[in-house]
Amino acid sequence: MVFQKKLTKALKYDQLTNLPNRYLFNEFCKKNDFIKGAVIVIDLDNFKKTNDKYGHSKGDSVLSEVGKLLLDVFPRENTFRISGDEFYLYYGDNDLLERLEKLIYLGKNSNIITKYNISFSIGYYIKNNDESLELSFEKADIAMYDAKKINGFSIMQYKK
Image (cartoon, rainbow, N blue to C red; front, side, top):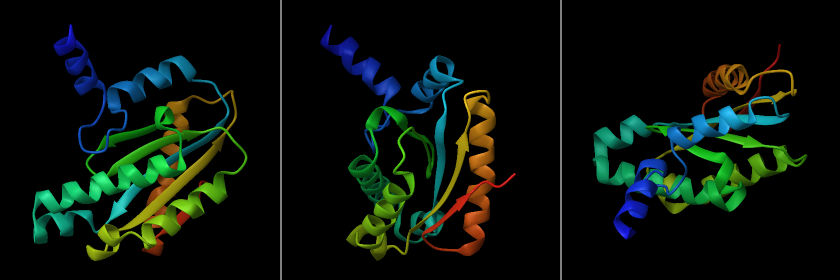
């Protein structure tokens, strides 16, 4: 029974960040498809360079640190590590920008993040309850790529 619980957790949570993984993200979307709130896509800038230059163990320490910072700012159950250095979040409260700014502040003041010249590109979209989460995350992803053009701890809202 203990082994099964550990196996179930390993299949649903990312081992480096202890965040819910893509499996739980997909379950979250199925159960909450038409809720309103903010959807957020975060991608790490310069992450591949860190892995290539310093090795995957250093990249793992960066990912672990980012997971910790995300949990300092956002609820765990709506914060997902999707793949590599990409994170998806859902947030339903009104203080979104304050929380995103806090995340950037924590990132800029993290020894691990700054040591490896990592920053965050953050895209978000405020969805209505008549739009699917899948489409909303696609819009947040577009905003994240626009944020990448700014280069370095940037936040961009999707504009229609």
